[in-house]
Image 1 (spheres, rainbow, N blue to C red):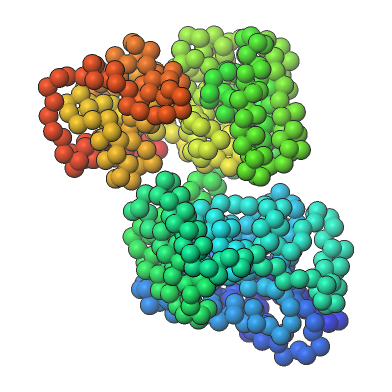
Image 2 (cartoon, rainbow, N blue to C red):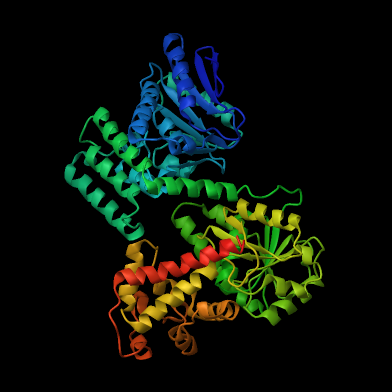
Length: 630
């Protein structure tokens, strides 16, 4: 068989298998690749002169980016999935049981099936290149690692570390991988030739221990049960039980780890994986994955890349954008009216970075480097050298327009001006702009450091080049931009605000804050509508709902309750009181709400709460599609 994706190089007593998928920027672990690997492993096993096998990638910044999801999507039955998994097991078992030690050199992304492959190797070494990441992302697709990842990961990393990776789909870098014993050694990019050679020599001379973080206490069933219980409780807090994959993964590991033979364990793993992979939930999540992948390629690369930015504003959104760009761009400048505001802005930005230091996602050196990119000013001078200016100031049409007039007097013609407005018309805002082709809306969501979606709203004058430049920079920061036509509320707020209003209208008629929030959260939303509106800010909800009511008329009925809360300056978390009270870090229903709603109450069933809350969003989404807004 002609090898299309793998190359075997034998030099002296060392065999090297190079992964290099034909006509692809990244390596994918398809079943055809596994078939090729199997043939090469047979060749290696026959060669009695070989002492070591090295696995590496020819792709820049990529080892293996996971399994071929399209192959999983194409399966017709659970039996097809199950049988194919065992073909994969046969190959990885062959790798694990080679007569000679195997070393995986990882210089780039090692995800999903790729991570399961390297777990079957005797040793793993990695470059500390920024692109070197390890992750089991399968949970996001509605299943879990299915090529013995639930078995090899706990054995190598210990139960706690393995559960953390498998159940969360979190990404870790090479240094974290070394700390949890996922890899045996790490080194800086540029040292690989010397370091790999030295590591191979040490392996041949039996100077490298096989890593194993599985603790002796994990042999005690009582201890394992405590770990499983805590993992389950952690899942309950974060993940709705209707989302089966992480719960099923935990169940499989609890039923197999140190309880049954490897052979029996992978049978149960394959059985449960097959059920999940054929579920409607998984099919929808796979479609969603491909949708996001398509969105992240929905632009043309430009030569004029955005590398520097200016952020106008000192609110929560401005701080989030400053943090984001300080992490990814070369330079970030803050424009404020009063320099006294700077200390507070920098303090809040550092809070986010401090969390990343404590969770070991960034080092103090990296954070210091990023913080040093930030400069500030209280005037419009010296802004010419910046590529992108984002205005995140008060939601006032006249103030924003005057700001653009002042900006254009002091910036280069190639500089893009963007508004982070959540509801004002981009077309209307552009009327005060002279260089209209370089103006558009870039609407981030709070908290900026966590929310992946960004709405990009061009006016009728915005150039295609401007849109491409903006898409390119947003994607480089890990965001998923969507192109949205200019309309009141754009997409997210046009769907969200009617939903929040409807929840308040339901409360005015009957039920309770706790009951409505619990019903909607149990249905599957990440949080209830009142928790959400308190987080977004009741002032924002009030102002946007007024804009939507003006634009869409009677179908967007405004809640009197939200208006009353706004008038009383009960704005949610930011003011300490909203639908809930947030005093002393304890969250309780705000007792003053009762005085604001009707005394005559009716019983509203859970089914009605769900239908009224969800259908209003579904209807608005259908209208957005009909109007070609997105």
